[in-house]
Length: 300
Ligand code: KIV
Image (tube, rainbow, N blue to C red; front, side, top):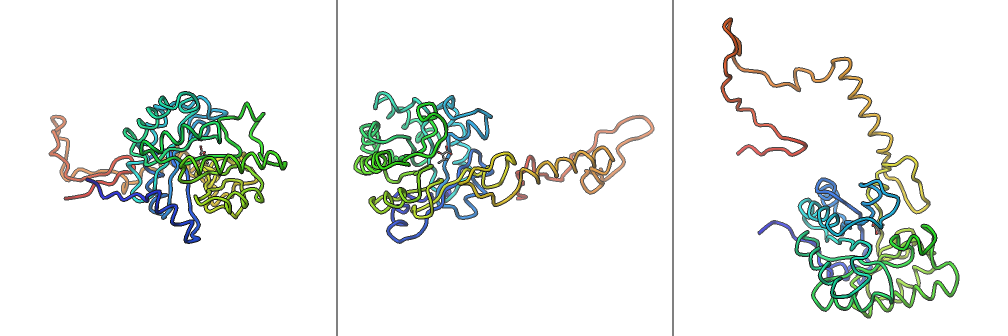
C-alpha cells in the first residue's frame, strides 16, 4: 500500500460539470512528476513528446512502447495525487484492436499510469471501445496529431476550413460515443475548439486550441523555457531555464577552475587525525549521513 491517491477519470469529468478548469503538464521522470504534483496540477501526461525533448528526435514516430513504460514508471513513482496519462506510441494501437489492448494493458500493469492517450478519430473508435470495455480509460487526441506528421505534411494547424473543421467535430463526437473520458485538442482554431467543447459532455484539454477548452496542457520543457530557440505561438514560457541553466553551469565551471568550490562547508572532515608518521590509519566509520543525487536521507 502507498499513500498515493491519484485523481480519477470521474473526478476529472466532474471538473467540467463544475466549470473548473483542468490543468495537465507533461513529465518524463520522477523529479519533475513530484514537482508538478506538489504544485497541484490535476493530470500528468507522459507524452511521446519525450522523443523530442528527451531523446533529441525530430518527431515522435520512433518512440517505443518499452520507452514509454520506462518513463511512465518513473513518473508514477514521483506523483501522488495527479492522474497519470501515458501516450501509446506510434503503431502500438493503429492496427489490430487486440494488439492495442495488449499494449495498453502493459502500460497500465507495468507503469502505474491510470489511463492511456491515443491519437486519431473515427479510424480508431473500435479500438477505443475495446480498451474502455476492458477497463482501460482512454483519452483521445484530435487536430494536430504529431504521430501523423508525415500525413499532415508537417506540424500544421488543422481544421482551418469548414469541411476540415466538421471532420474534427465528427471525430470528437465519435470518440465520446466510443467511451473516451477526455480529449486533447491540439493546434486547431479557437473557434472550432469552443464548438467541440460545447458539443461534448467529456472535457477537452487544449494545446494551441484557445481559452474555451475545459483545460490546458503544455510540455513542461516549453513551460520552463528550456529551449531558447523554440518559441511557437501557443507556448507561454513561465521561466527562462534555457538561459538560467547555462548561467549556473558557467558559474560552477568558473568556481572549479578558480578552486572556489568546494569550500570547507561542502567538504567532509575527520574528527580525529587520520595519519601517523608510520602511514595511513583506517578511519572509524563516519557517522555523517548524507543524501545522494538530490535524494535527502531521513535520519531515524
Ligand atoms: O506528447 C505530448 O506531449 C502530447 C501533448 C503535446 C498533448 O501529446
